[in-house]
Length: 383
Image 1 (cartoon, rainbow, N blue to C red):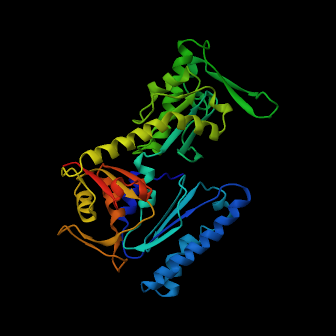
Image 2: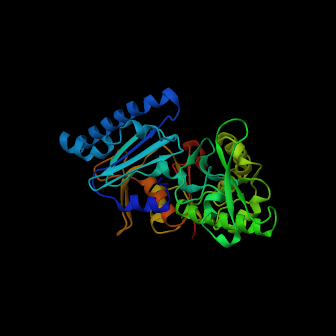
Image 3: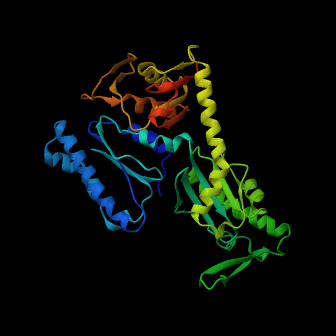
């Protein structure tokens, strides 16, 4: 499964050309509600087609451009959704992401892809991972403060038996399967080293966790989310020895995670992380307010766009669901803001958020009323 990351953001940015179509929609993932997904989907494609015709494409040209999106509309596609769907298509590019964000419906046609609704996936503001570990099962979850979904793992061992069954035969490692308790009929792998609880067993677990950690790097590469571990007490410090992910949280969820539903893991993880997220945002708002008028902050859209492009923004607050249209010409550092979208315009707030992230800054994509000072956007400058 392709996760949205800084790398994906860079790819979408470089794909800029004329007639870039960005579609965002909320999706249902439970029972009969999933039947609403294709209906919303078709309505949004129709809206995209109409916008393309408005800017000069013939009807058939618009349909041809949107063909890759039409081809998604199959039964299996709708059975693997999260809370939101983001789709990007242009003449020479097509990509989509299922993400744990409940988007507002939105269709944008511009000279580049509209990315602000996805920015919260990269800000660390309420997004995190949960890694549930036992000797018999590995599960990775992507979560927001509101939702959680399991990620289908590839190249990651799902148990210690799977990880080590081909390693070091001289150590006499062996495993067998046994029926789980409770009459469920499932089969649980049971791993044996030379003496359970001894140094050999700990070494085997550490090797297992190194393999898990190595397999996860493809998923977690360049991610900034906190990662919360869930597992019995003696396993957590062993995994920390194997871990190479920079944003692993010290406090973990204690207990056997195999017995917990995703929603239960999510609730316990959020108890750990909520104070961290709230403190992070409150500290940034307080710093912004304390430095008003010092030259270290700005809420002027042209100044923010220029500062973002030239790597001067440390933190930026942008309102989700709002656009400010205009043109930025970096060669002359000139910015033209328009009251309504015109040909060749782009969302300047989206542009500022994009370059802030690509240049290593932090973005808080928040509700409009949560932008400090009731401004259209707010930035803390590096210099």
